[in-house]
Length: 260
Image (tube, rainbow, N blue to C red; front, top):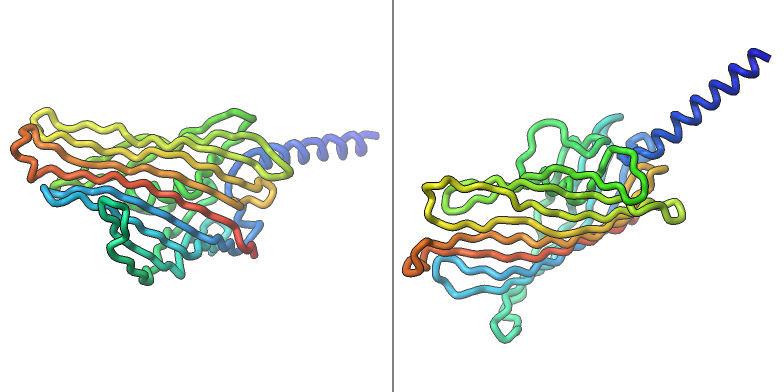
């Protein structure tokens, strides 16, 4: 009888442990070796630099995003087979130039199961990783939110402004074995020294939706909408030749093609 009771107790402890880990949303590198996503990015931008005529541009980037496991604890993210289509748009909405060309691979090394990166990484790439794959590494009930801290460096007129904020990840629930998430991106907190007369505008805002399989330990789909704006404005309107501005809207779509 004692052996049976011990066996039941052992089973209950083991079952509780499995359930607990199943509720933690993190990568599971023991469940796969390689994920291949179809990657699509559409970007439209309005810009004005130092008194020059305002420009409207449109870029479309297509390719593959690969997550490849290289050890029990680390994986690499590689954007490959990238082709960029670029065009300028005039004030009437007419396309002035269309150019398609290949883009070199981009990569992020040493992604850990908790979504962090091992080693040094510049602010832009770290933010990209947290935006593409917002792993919370926590248990969550429906409606719970987790803030992933983010910092985006803006280099303007020879100065770097480190803008801080978050990607707020909200758990919506599980539908037919797929966990649903939505996020709010708000990176807009920064300070400028009091003695600086130039006015600055810098922020990254947006939202996203993701599907994640906690049983398999990886993402299956994602859609991200981001608005990035930055600019300067002199304290004297007569110095408009020194003013600059950029307002860029980007949509990224990820769709899992194969899991190995």
